[in-house]
Length: 61
Image 1 (cartoon, rainbow, N blue to C red):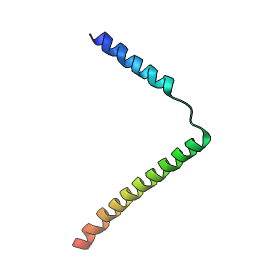
Image 2: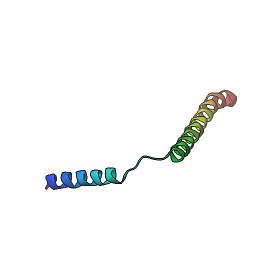
Image 3: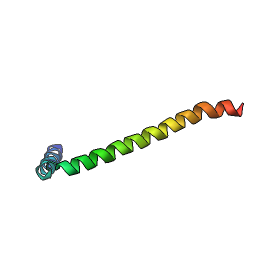
Image 4: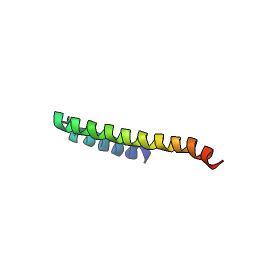
């Protein structure tokens, strides 16, 4: 039974790889820009939270 599950999963992975294609330059650049923007935003949110956690306890005292 497990052998069939494993073989089915391998078949699924092979089908996904067959459908995959290399992105063209414009698609790659767009994806890269979006990824960089999201990383920047997440980093900025983390930095703001860090600064607030450092400043707010001192202000409350």
